[in-house]
Amino acid sequence: MSPSMELFDEAKYKALMDGLDFQEIFKSKIENSFTLGAEYYGKKYVSVSMTLNMHDRKMRLGDMWSIMTDGDHGSPDYQEDGVLYLLSESVQAGYIDKSKCKFITKEKNIELRRSCLHPRDIVVTKTGVYFGKSAVIPQSISEANTIAHVGKITLKPEYNPYYVSTFLNCKYGYYQLRRRGIKATRPEIKLVEFPDIVVPVFSKSLDVVIEKLVCAAENFMYLSSKKIVEADKCLLPKLNFLVDFSTISIRSLSTSFALSGRLDAEYYQPKYENYHNALHTEHTVSSLCKINDRNFIPEKNARYNYIELANVGMNGDISGAKIANGKDLPSRARRQVKKGQVIISSIEGSLQSCALITDEFDGAICSTGFYVLESDNINSETLFVLFKSEPIQALMKQRCSGTILAAITKDEFLSMPFPEIDGSIQKEVAFKVQESFSLRKESEQLLEYAKRAVEIAIEQDEISALEWLEEKGVKK
Image (tube, helix red, strand yellow):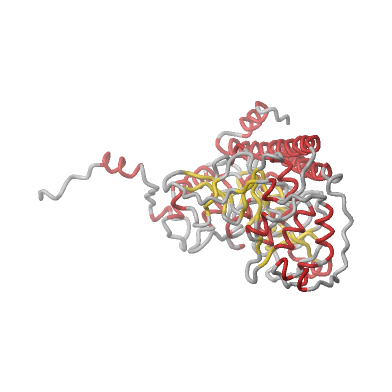
């Protein structure tokens, strides 16, 4: 035998392969004739498929629905109010984030009746960075519509939408979506790929418990939002104002361009002067706050939470932040944050993206699209609420400039008027915000319980899932 030839060593071969995402698939076991990509047969996808195929009671998702479609493929004109219109980012895993929705007219909603949403419809994101998230339209949303990137599923009456949506969010549902969503550029699952999603079927007992958990989570989310509104109201004595919404302002060059360098008419509308006066302050952001704009270079192989503008919700929550090695982060990931700091978007279309950094994101990195602030004079919670308040938001919008991507520059941001807040009011605001964050955590915990219970039912059995929930304090 040639010295270069060795007998096949099966043990050595297995040892080499164990560390790789590597699968040997017999031709007879290939699942379909048109998907031969290696990623499709990755270990996690094959493992999920095998587990589901071993389950006694299962159905195709396509056999469970009466309607499956997607949203509007056009570009509707958004309104200040009207019928709620869901974007991809509006659909979170287990709930609808209304703060990231738009509005369309009732007439447009009638025109788009194919994608009209009602309570107990399931929505699932089909493409892009928000891919694979599912939620049920709650009773509090009597009517809505949605964009093409979101799929709509109306189940037959005998199936529970809360269970099916939770299944899609758990690993056994998500990996099926993700497997079919493998495309050349970004994840995308097409409508024709939904019917073959395999859904294990359990008794009504599990369905009912899952629905209770998700609905309780939804209620906690609502109460969390309510606490932020209450915190904002605590500042009303300080921010009491009556805004003049007239659109005419006559200025000389010496009282306009010579002072501000701005010639756009919007900048000089009377409402902004009223907002300024409402703050009753001679202070600016720079006199009350410290800004962190130091460039931070992530270590190549260190793991970081990375916060983008799209990860920040209306109530200051951070969700969907990705965890990645420093070498894989984008060039705009250059601001490291710490607990107690507040991050505020500088981009005109997302000025409401403002968040308080909590323990979970201490040491995270955020995009340079945020300003990072802290203050020795104002506690973090009050700072957060102030930047979300109507006067500050309006003054930030006034100071935005730019032709392609309007934003507020650092100089404009730091020179913006900013109020001092009485210590007793700050304490009250801090208490409300902390209550809000606590309620949100409870909501997120319940959604995690629901997902894990479904996974246990699949991996073991329904009784084990219900017993596990009981151990967590969840009653049938």
